[in-house]
Picture 1 (cartoon, helix red, strand yellow):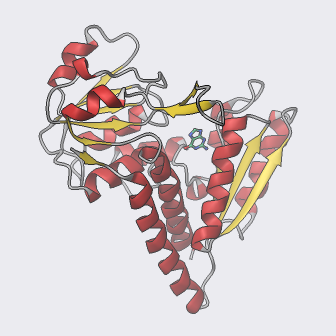
Picture 2 (picture 1 turned 60 degrees about the vertical axis):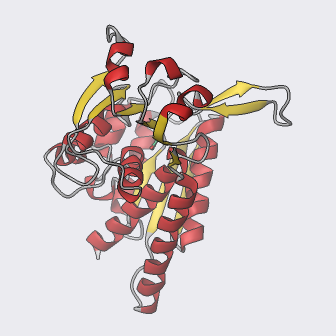
Picture 3 (picture 1 turned 90 degrees about the vertical axis):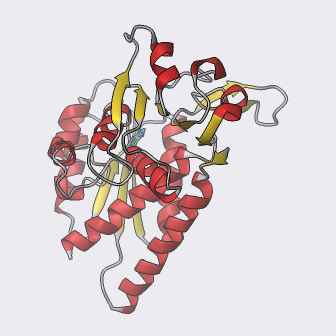
Length: 291
Ligand code: GUN
């Protein structure tokens, strides 16, 4: 069984990006600049955005954190987005999701300049991804593709079951793995909350991508020997034996699934760190495109 080590792989990618930034600086070219917008006080979102900004510093990017209060109106947020679209110093930016309920997420994502949309969430970029045109791939699926590629996990002709159909993970994951590309050429089934007989599907799967958000959902009895497991879930579970009072759990019951797997991502230290590395890669690309 091989652990797909996202922590190490993301460190490798960040080192590659840092090298590139050094070259840009030596040539007197512009340093890539990422901005992140966060609205409200969601604890998990603050942690994620903080990690993204810190990663920028690590590779030598410039970064701007825009923190807006929970009461920010949709019009105020749209005005901030217009400002970022017009700011030549900013190469790419993200609007952290979820947004407060009084703000229309689709309206906001549509307002982001597609050439600065390093999350790959703008409908133009989702369309370009589906059509296999150059674009920003959404960071989490992009990170999974990169892990599969770097560990040379066989995907061509394999049966893949993606559990979850979210716009951020499940849907793009299913599109990418079915395409003629590295870590692609697979036969993909998208399973979701209305799927009948999920276990019948997962028992036949060579690769399972779990992006459901239900802690330890996939158990050993649901998978066949030799399966490859990609666990996108991350949930805090109460654990009084921990100083923090919680532990992090994935969507996969690691203890029962890992002994049957040929490749598996751990939680934490699997897909999570890859997401940030790929956001940086997209920002580097945004900078190159603007130059
Ligand atoms: N919320 C959860 N994942 C993401 C992500 O990849 N990007 C943004 N902007 N928000 C998120």
